[in-house]
Amino acid sequence: MELYLDTADLEEIREIALWGVLSGVTTNPTLVAKAFAGERLTWERLSQHLKAVCELAGGPVSAEVTALEAKAMVEEGRRLAALHPNIVVKLPTTEEGLKACRVLSAEGIRVNMTLIFSANQALLAARAGASYVSPFLGRVDDISWDGGELLREIVEMREVQDLPVRVIAASIRHPRHVTEAALLGADIATMPHAVFKALLKHPLTDLGLKRFMEDWEKVKP
Ligand code: E4P
Image 1: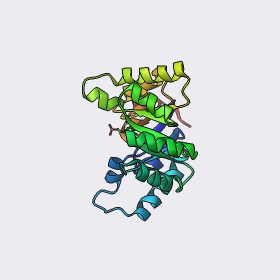
Image 2: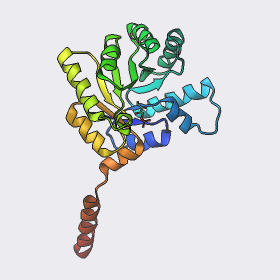
Image 3: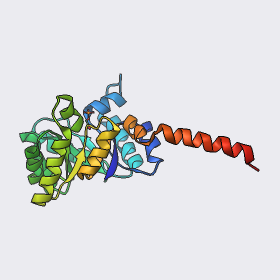
Image 4: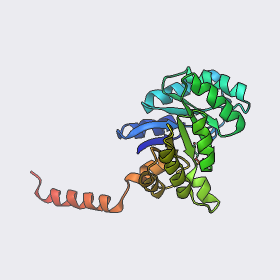
C-alpha cells in the first residue's frame, strides 16, 4: 500500500518526503484554505503552489475542482492537469462529477473521484473512467457506521469486477486506520501529517534507543 499525505502544506510535504516513503499527495478545498489562511487566492498563486506541491511530492497530486457543473468542472480540470504531469484531477461523486470524469478520463487526464461513501458510488466512478476512488473512512466512522466495511466492499468489488481503478483509503484519522486499510487491500492510504508522524512513534522504540545510548556511553572508545 502506498502512503500519501493529505495536505496542502509545503513544509509538511517537505518533511515527510525526506523519509523516503511518500508516494503522493491529496489536497481538497479545505486543506488549501488552511494552507492560505487569511489570504485571498489568485489563480497564479494557487497554480504556483500546486506546482511546488507536485515537485515535492514526487508522485500523483490530487487537486480538486471547485466548480459544481460538469462543463465548468471539465474546464477547471484541464487547467489543473496542464499545470504539472503529477496532477490528478479530483472531482466530487455527483452527477455532474461523473459527466466531467468521463470527459476528462477520455482525454487521458487522471481523475480521483472523492467523497465516496458507498460501494455503488465507487462502481459508478470506476465505470465513468476514474483512475482513483476515495472512500472516506473517518467520516463514516464519525457517524457510527463502519468505514472499514465500506473499504472492504469497495476493494472486494474492484477484485470481483476486475475494475481498473485504484482505491485510496481517505479521511484517515489515526494509525489503526492505516493498518486496517493495508490489511483490507487498499492501494493507497492518504493521511494528515500528524497521522504520518504517529505511524512511526512507539514508546518502546524511544525507551530502547535511550537504553542503548546510555549503555554505549559506559564503554565507547
Ligand atoms: C481525501 O482525499 C480528502 O482530502 C480527505 O481524506 C478528507 O479527510 P477529512 O475527513 O479528514 O477531511
